[in-house]
Image 1 (cartoon, rainbow, N blue to C red):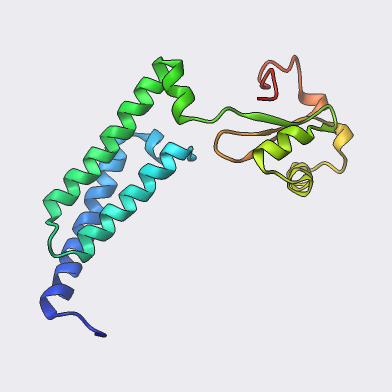
Image 2: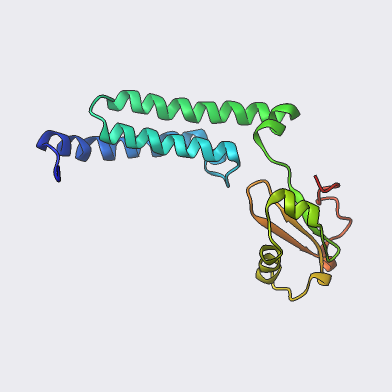
Length: 168
């Protein structure tokens, strides 16, 4: 079937913008944390929000009110988990990965690379993107909790208090 019924198409034209606007309102009310760079938990919430939006748009059996309740429930769950993670280390450990040093003082940690499934060429690309041409100029390359790389040059490493203390 190439086209839906006139009612189905009209429903999408009405429910689509309404669901989208209500999702934006819920995300704005829930705060910047909901839209931050993603941890695994944030990714799951984002996929669930997208799935809920698609279901509301395309399923005649799901009214807009139920979809909005789903959006709000997911945003509330994300808020609650973030609140507990901020206050209780075991919760934080369960929902967030630890940063991992992949290169320290110009030397690549092969064990860390293997554990994190990162290649030497990815580390080299991060170093180049930071504007450096050789590993010996780098105090650390850190794989952050959101999957991004931080490159800390030796001349800006200071006392290294911001670096993860162990390569875990």
